[in-house]
Length: 98
Length: 371
Image 1 (tube, rainbow over the protein chains, first blue to last red):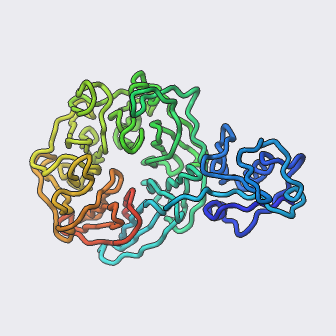
Image 2 (image 1 turned 60 degrees about the horizontal axis):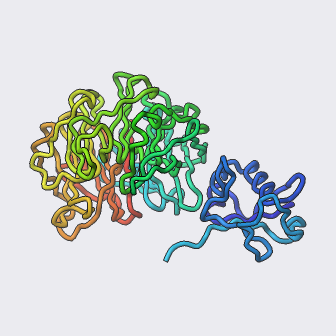
Image 3 (image 1 turned 90 degrees about the horizontal axis):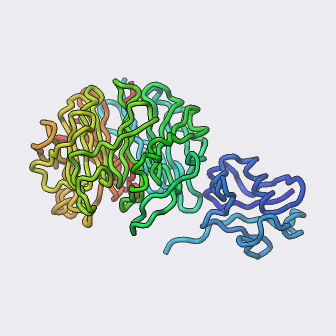
């Protein structure tokens, strides 16, 4: 299972407590993980990436294994530790404020 | 037993304020959707348990929430707002052309008769409709693709469609207003549109009486007299007696005719309310005195309503969607401020009291009269 950590405002929206566990068919990429996430929680469509273009929203970031994957190819395989469920794939709301 | 439910959208969540028909003691519930901007919350006239809310944030964009139990519980519904076809371009602040881009829903207008039908006015300006209780949305593209569309430009708050009025007598008639394009009317259920801006004069555009380019802040109508429209423009308070074919100024003796909201007494079609604001640069009441002005003559002659409102050191604003009336026998009127106060009057504005004082900045106020 793929572990996904969502920011607090999206956990509230999706009525989720804690991490999300996802079963992802085929290659485990950022795109396939987000597809599976949105299939399981349709209310998240459009809140992380654009519904039509699938482009990441400007103030959302993607981290895993202490790396920023936000600008990586969305079809590139995720790290093995994520695929193995040992590390979470993190959707992060950019810091903002004073 | 009658009652009132006030729906307040704020910068950081929604609040539901309820009272019985006396409107003296209030229960405050919220924040709902904590941390998100709630541009508008409005209940269905056909079923008061059905309420729609527009929820958005800079991080995660637009969400639409729906309640089927009068605002106790909520569920997100559809949030895909796609312009029909290939969106064209419109003017930007600097005069260059920019592609139409969806940013948020400013206003939700439920159908007068069907709780599953609701209209959405969005930024960049366009009109959307849902007939399945918000699950899916489709654009009524005749407005955005009007021949003048490329000439429309944003107001300071963005190029937003902020006013939708459904005519209770002519079911195919819809009025909309866009900052800063102007007012538009459809007589065929939103298929085609005509600008209704004759009589308006707009500073800051090359041709002050142009067909479009007017910064209309808000339009209001009394349901018993749908051909009479009242408008708070960027500057000027206006009235039309022929469904927007021509507008006449009714600013009269107001201390300033800049402002945002305008509304009409529930039982007196000639009684109109505005909240004068100092100027476009100074978004606070003149002299630091928060005054609602009431005209009982359909405009022109205005009286300040001050009892219970702060009359010194008050520098809040009242946004365009942040005033509403109930329809109890003694009409109630309500407004919210950027300082987080929601004020209510249960005697048509003669006296006021804060329902709640310290909410986040209030973006919108709507009222449901419950029987």
